[in-house]
Length: 196
Image (tube, rainbow, N blue to C red; front, side):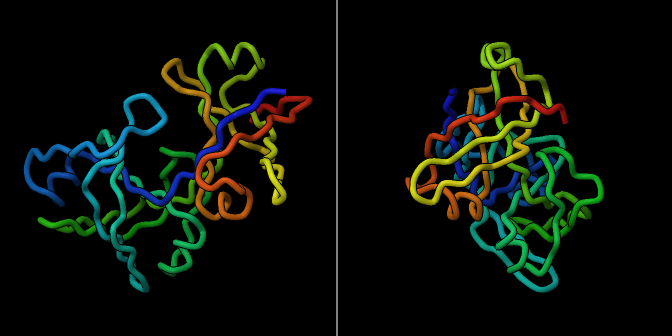
């Protein structure tokens, strides 16, 4: 059976260039801190504060590069701390999601929507997709290792020629299921593939 690296994706923020300019200054460029597993993605040095009517999270890391729309990905625990109920969505699916106030060193941005709880998913390259007969939005199951092993069902597959074969889960899921911390190897246990 195929194995896959499972990474924990901690809470983070993606910013549009317009919002980045408001928060940090005109024509601002993010400062590279660390490369992420997916090609071209990186953690930036910059952080922001996210505020709602009932809570606040400081030191929210920005991931680059900039995107078309500002998006914030939280865990359920984060959402409860903020007193909000974001929908469970894949990255980029923001319509009707929750809003909040993003605070930077030079300004503040109020977003009407953009806060989500990221749905667990797999980034899949074309070679692995062909090998496993996967298509965009296929739903598969993955078993985590160790004495707290769980089976994550309905893990949605996203396919792109630039992707590397990794599964992403949030902090709550990682704390409950990964004995080795933020990065472990899981086992794909599908016998049939569902199409989402």
